Length: 329
Image (cartoon, rainbow, N blue to C red):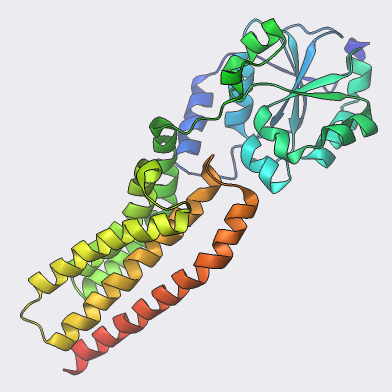
């Protein structure tokens, strides 16, 4: 019966140089929506009708993490169309969800391929899937595997996940991996706005703005667990405030020959813009961590985003005022 299913694609557990290159490019944020695997059913090794079915996203890093962990294991991999988004984020966005899972089970005619009626999902896909609905609509029972794909062989051996396999960690190395993506994403505005500031107000404002971005995309992930307050926005305001005070003092010291009005205007630009930019970038980081919930992020956005906008707008007004003052006086 399996031989008649011609649409099952073959895949191995071995990763090639091309795969590693794709991973590197994805990690630094280049072509973020192009790291895709065609959705559908794949077979790894020499599976039979009794082999396990593993479900993953069509993001290359998710797919490759799964298949590379299945070395020496025969099975099927059902790839959902998550628009190139990893399992965790796709579960939150709804693309790794009940409807897509049911759709792919039916499209692949999975019931004709395996005799059992169970599928193994990554634990981080749980928030997007209603297991009882999948069972009602397809007859397949959803089992949740470990958080990390590398623990699958041990999970399959014991038919259960240990408490350690269920734990989600977000250590320093996990946070450091995300920094290159954030830097590349902010590189263009950093260069563009930094250049404008350099030729209008000088090197110090340019460095100040650049530092606000670097604080948000580099320092914030590193210092995240140790910054006080429970939410990301206020953590960002605190970090940005420290950077702003440093540059505010530098502005006064270096430009002490300037008039009091100009010093006041430029210092206010620094004190308003830097914290708002750093806080915004810090808020953006909520989607990459284990410290937040969907409802909590929504509440934080409604509470703090308007404050960021008003602070930034105020900084822009003082920035325009400093330029006009410099031109007219």
